Length: 268
DNA sequence: GAGGATCTCACGAAACTTTC
DNA sequence: GAAAGTTTCGTGAGATCCTC
Image 1 (cartoon, rainbow, N blue to C red):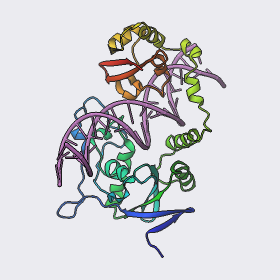
Image 2: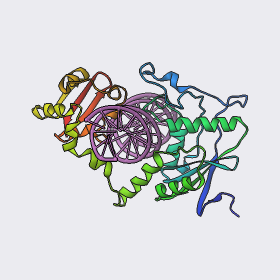
Image 3: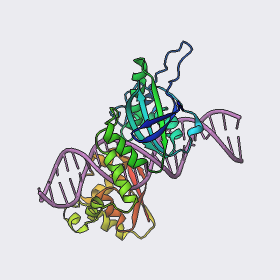
Image 4: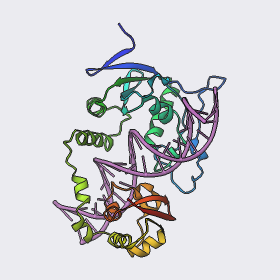
């Protein structure tokens, strides 16, 4: 019997390693608080799991560039299922090493959550083991396992559904209702929140790029920008939001952004 | 109730830093 | 200088809130 093989449902997972946090000379786990190192910490809020403490750990680099589904077990109990395109990166740069930025909103709360949970399990004397299934069908299998086992650390909403839709889209079966809704310019113009004025303004620009301050944009749209525009760079992403269509549809994209200060638009 | 606006999550790419 | 490691940013997508 191969002790490195473990069947979860009908899938053959390989044992990767035990997760072992770094310890000091006395064998005590080194806990750290990377959020203190973030230069802009005064301007952003910690995410739900950003408070820490966190630990550092690594898995063998043998697992680099391996795409598939991973499972984390705590004392023989399946606690988390995830997917990745590179297992080594996911753990050695993601879960195993929390960067300062990731403790804050707009960072990677899942990394914080999993790292902190692993630390707590190990502090309670439990052993945390990692298993991996190399597969291209990572989204489908991840979803299937989460639905079947309801692992404690997996969130119940958002990602799983998104992953499923991503798969459907990738195989050409997705019905992109959300995107179609966003592209419904006729109704959007009725409730555009002033962004039509921004479209019109950009349409009149003759150069290839323009830098506008937040105040200038507010004057153009004749209202204040929403708080999210000040807090989240994601608000300015070129897609994924209905308001982005107001600059995209006239051939512009956001090139650079200084939150709360200015935005550089450039022609697509 | 419909649909736009906002918030949040998650991944990967890019940029930057460190090590050899 | 190249490779490896680390950190930050950009993007896409779903959930929820809000307005009409």
